[in-house]
Image (cartoon, rainbow, N blue to C red; front, side):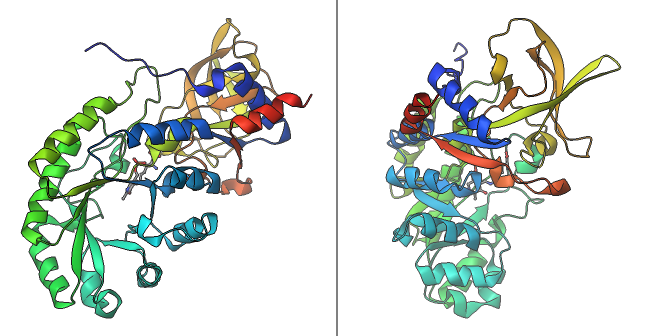
Length: 397
Ligand code: LLP
């Protein structure tokens, strides 16, 4: 078919843009999350009839307002640490623990015990846990994460399947796990696979459902197949947005073959990436050996994705958004590392100058969540933007 371009970003609208410039006045670097976009993505996923349960992987962005917005849309919440579990119950007092999934990797045993004590659904991914701490798990219903032996994703560092990945029970050991579980009166009620992040092929999810269903039939007690997160978003104009209709149709087709099971998904990025921008201020503009660089007051400490995965993020000069005269800039941060580069040869307004407000786009997922205090730089700030906030920002002078 023909290429479907990505939608115009929310921050290009005049009121939203004005609100961002206002928010940048108070403090930079600062993440801003636009709730209408989070809600729009949530509703797109709710429209996929083949999916019975939706969880949000809060590791992508655990801002309390985002958790509340998604819980309000009926999403469950997927956590991977005690800290994330505590964040959920602090943001949503009285939240039904049955809507919370705990899917840790090599976590201390106390965290599993605490999650079970709260009534949260716990996913385990090895038999050694049951052998070493039988009393923690005895009598509980558990979900089992299986390594299907293959993985995928936007970068080798986010591929979570196969022999070299630390996640999941080897498919060869499923029978062994089932025996160990039976001996402890543990019921396996869900099977889980998350094979990577930023996966574009619709066939991937069909294959995962198909393979999990095969194991589920062998095990017998399984009700839910959780096929993980991993839905991509278009980070550049060259990326095509996920065809959700095709995705949903693919799931419906494979579900028709395995009608006994409910399907669950747990996306992170898809729900929040496009809702977030990182606002930073230009610090210096420097020319060296024919390369022009603009420095930002945000670096790899604020957003590590470009340094860690060579990830692409669009970068704009919000103060001069419509300037036609452009020049190539390397966009860098203030951290003492050569990898502290947000983008090479980015076309920006030629007039870009210290003090300009710069915007790093699509930073709502794995942005603040992965920020650090490296070089003893402060963590970036965070702010929520919704229609009410814009209305009040537009009233102030
Ligand atoms: N479920 C499990 C078990 C996961 O490990 C993850 C992500 C997700 C769900 C959500 O995946 P998503 O829908 O967001 O792709 N820091 C990397 C991504 C690492 C993802 C880790 N696990 C990045 O910035 O690209």
